[in-house]
Structures are given as structure tokens and as C-alpha cells.
Length: 81
Image 1: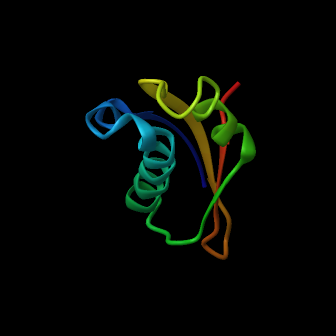
Image 2 (image 1 turned 135 degrees about the vertical axis):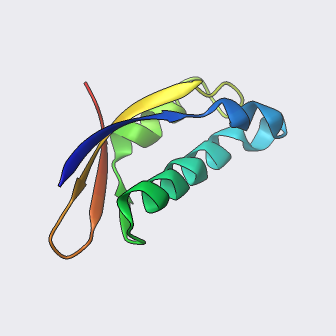
């Protein structure tokens, strides 16, 4: 199964500046667990680099990702180009 999602990261702006990018990564993981119904989530380094692109304080407001679920339940999350 393969799906493309636009994950809103607006709520990250409500947390302290020094933990925004780590919180955004956690939000991506929680979003994928909720929507793909799996606890085994593998986030690609391209997604991590996109969130951390402007540092720890200035995260993007949203991010577009492609999620692929394998037969064993593993979900791979990559950045949509």
C-alpha cells in the first residue's frame, strides 16, 4: 500500500524554540502510526534533513511525504520530490 500525505507541522510553533525540530520528527511518527495503522515506522533521512534544514527553531509549516506499507507491516516514509 502506498499513500501520499501532507503532514501539518503548525502545532510545533507552540512549543519552546529549542525543541521544535525533535518535536516535528515525533509528530511525523505519530501521524504515520495513526494513519497507516502500524507501530513499525522507518523515517528516511531525507525527511529528517528537510525538517532540520533551517535549524532547530525554524521548522517548515507542513511537509509532503510518501508512505509505503510492506506486507509485514513496516511503513517506510520518504520525502515527495
